[in-house]
Length: 197
Image (cartoon, rainbow, N blue to C red; front, side, top):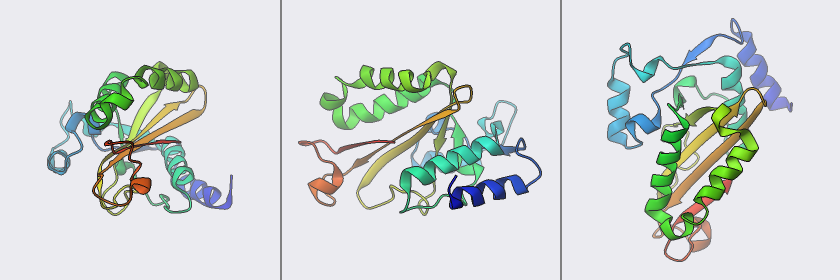
């Protein structure tokens, strides 16, 4: 571990215990990513069937935050991210549908031929059926994709505890009317920017 990761690790372990559970936010795939739905989910009460009851242990939360720091270093520091900025997704099928729905909306002709290859590559890397799937749901101030012209983004973590491996899958769609074509990842008339982390 590098210095910054060691400091973060010590901070996480300075609390009562690494196995202590932290509350998670409701999953994006349940409420959607619109501001209206996020407001609605933040106002909902935690009933018996509420997704607000999802929890994460400190060690797993440390892994997710460290992954974010590695992916966006040196531009962003997520060391102060809380468990409330993460969600546990209900199932692999929900995530696949959410990703494919967003990708098809902006890049149908480019995405359709590679969709099955994408999921096969992820499965080869992490064994998708054996993963816990989390998403990072930042507020406007801590979102690495909050620049002008970003239409939507997603940040999924596929964590396989048995393999001790995390695949971070993030993507954003940038409006063709903001920035230069080089900056926005434009391909023809599409505004698809797939990043491999």
